[in-house]
Structure formats: structure tokens, C-alpha cells
Image (cartoon, rainbow, N blue to C red; front, side, top):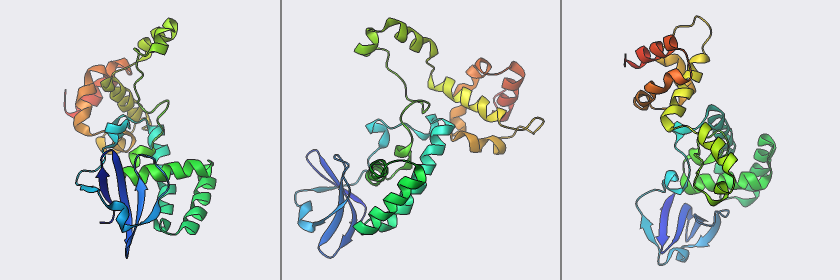
Length: 225
């Protein structure tokens, strides 16, 4: 029963721990801190076999996150991971949340939000920033943008496809190498967090972000010359 999802109508609970006739649960919709409840709290609930998919709830895939967003995600996960062993002890949990808040230079409320997100989805990708630079596409059809034509025009001019984003990220990774350093997949894959097979789709856009010689070398690296 530990770390399982339970659903009743539109309500979803995750059972985090079990002890005798009590369960430590988190409400997946309200994103409130875990609480101990009697086992009868699950009456009427049906166990879910499928996990929650972050992408279905508006979170981005790891492949489209910027290096900065990935770095922030790992820092937040490290802080959250330090709290996990103390979930069932409210006093110790609060102490670790305070330490994590100091470590990240954020409020305790923010850390609690990170913790709840991770407990609900069990995927550290939900800890990545969801603002500027994380690959989230802006909608140019929103009513607010329709009232701001100059702003909408600029967004349309600056927007890029996911393949273009991958190409820009790949070129950025190559540029992190020292001058004269041999270009090889092993040296750049740590910068990317993009599956190699997906990079093939970005090849036509490489010359948008680098010279033809570098683009040709990258194509050789991917075996697509």
C-alpha cells in the first residue's frame, strides 16, 4: 500500500506510509502537506495502477528544459530529498524544511510547495522552474495578447519550434568545449539532457545558430552527414 495512488471520483490521494491502522496521505489535488489518517479514510477509494504523468498536468519534459532550469531542478530536488526521511515526524520534518529554505534562500512555504509537488508526482521534473527559459511555449492566441498587437508581433518573431530549441541547445553545448578539444558525444551529452535520437530532428536548424563548418561537424557526430 505504501506509495500508492487512490482515486474516488475526482479526488486522488497518495499513500506515503502505513503504520498499524493509520496511513500518511497527501491530497494530490489540494497539494497540502501530508497528514496521518485512519485507514478508513480510504473507504470508497479505488487503487490506481497508473502513475500521474507530469506532462498531462502542464509540466514540461526534461528534454526541453534549459541548462539553467535543469540546474535549479537538481538543487531543489537535493533539498527535497533531505526532507523525505522525516515525512512521518512532523517536528523533524519542519526542522528540515527550515534548513532547506535557508539552503535555497527561499521561504519555508516555497519549500513545502516543492515537497508536495514531488510527493504527488514522484518525478523531479516538476521541480524545474516553469517560467522564462524552461522551454514553455507562449500562446499567441490568448485574449490578452490580441489586445497587445506589438507585443504579440514580437513574440511571434522570437518564438521557435522545439526542434529549433534543441538545435540551439546542441550548439550551446558544443561551444562549452575548450578550443581545440575533440568534439565527441561523450563530452557534450552531460550538457544536453536530450535523447540522442531526438537530436536528429534538429539537424536542419543547426545553421541558424552556428556556421556551416560547425554544423557539418555536429552532423558527423550524430552520424547524419
